[in-house]
Length: 157
Image 1 (cartoon, one colour):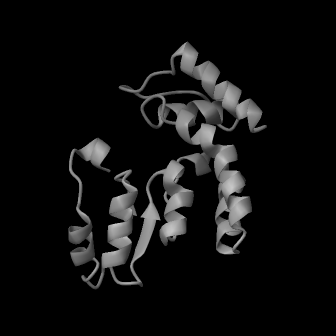
Image 2 (tube, rainbow, N blue to C red; image 1 turned 30 degrees about the horizontal axis):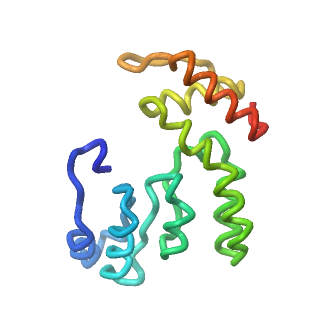
């Protein structure tokens, strides 16, 4: 994840790594669809590209990615599974509709440092107790309200 590591593996590097026998896939989290296209174009067809960003899951699947390593799935597992299933069954319009329905969740889960919003969401859903270990801290009041609004609209809390 370039945003966290400060380093981006180029598509050419990923394609070279894809030739190594025990490297079977990559979590692609650059946020760059052009890079995703290049990886899918350059890597062997059997190489598994997974989205590392919920907001790019649907577009990346359209390009040839095989799935997602998801934050939103912790909060809305059925909806995310339904999006995947609809896409692989060729129900692209339904998948697109689910993608746009989940769009606000994809964004609100990153208004503060991960995993603060997802832990807060799960607490609002009565799935866990809300507690954080330092250096994490509770969400700001404004972002908490935004999160509550999104969860309510999705009928999750």
